[in-house]
Amino acid sequence: MTLTEIKQALAANHLRPLKSLGQNFLFDQNICRQIVAWLNPEPGSAVVEIGPGLGALTELLLDLDIGLTVLEIDKGLAAYLRQKFHRFDNFKLAEGDAVETLHTVPSASCVIGNLPYNVSTPLLVSMLELDPLPRHCVFMLQKELAQRLAAAPHSKEYGAVSILIQSYYSIETLKSLKSNVFFPAPEIDSVVLRMDLKPGTPGFSPEERRAFYALVRRGFSQRRKKLRNLIELDSDRRAEELSVSEWQELYRKLK
Ligand code: SAM
Image 1 (spheres, rainbow, N blue to C red):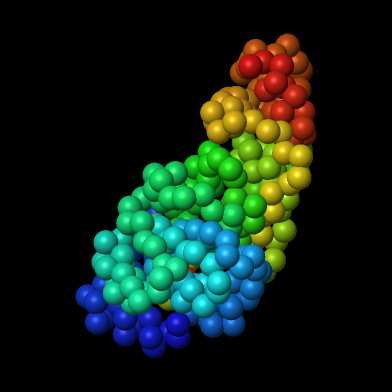
Image 2 (cartoon, helix red, strand yellow):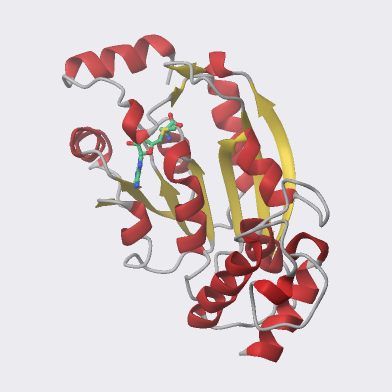
């Protein structure tokens, strides 16, 4: 969608971008096309889009031979999307908070989204509770979160969410974006990132993944403290000093 189309669609439907829902609409057509190309879903596969907004990515995804379910919380946008895409047989809309609805839609091999910044972390955590896990994801995220997801041990960005995601996914940062490709322009920088399910992941069930994340969060609850003061482990090391696989071993030992 062009900037003019976005403004017209908002005005015609008596909508205005809500900061509280992270509504910054992408209007650079080339970037939209690139993001969809990076996902590159297999023909016939099931794809979920989180936060479709006015459908900038949705309209490109619907041209592919896939089944698409979009998850949108905003009632006004959901009504607009229903109207815009109702003629597509491969389009389904789940209205509501994607943190909740993600579990209710049929499992998808791919997930894509220009994620609302304020709930990106809960959305990723809730995606990690799906069974089976999606194989490929392309997300647009706040730069700081993208850095945390890809962070290495001993860095200040390395934390519980880095360990949860890296246990399952390899992460590739694809592109940094300036705020002037969005309407309205956000005050933050964005990054497009691809996540691919690693072969030979730890094989925890969704409940185990939740418990694993809870353990790691406890370990990071006070970064400067030694682990012996935070979890059931007699160690002088701090949470940020353990690698992803060491955290997995620790979880297996303690569970
Ligand atoms: N995909 C569109 C684009 O690229 O232009 C819109 C992206 S905008 C950054 C984020 C979208 O996520 C908005 O449409 C917003 O209403 C929606 N959203 C915010 N919180 C949500 C939630 N908890 N569940 C589902 N959608 C949400």
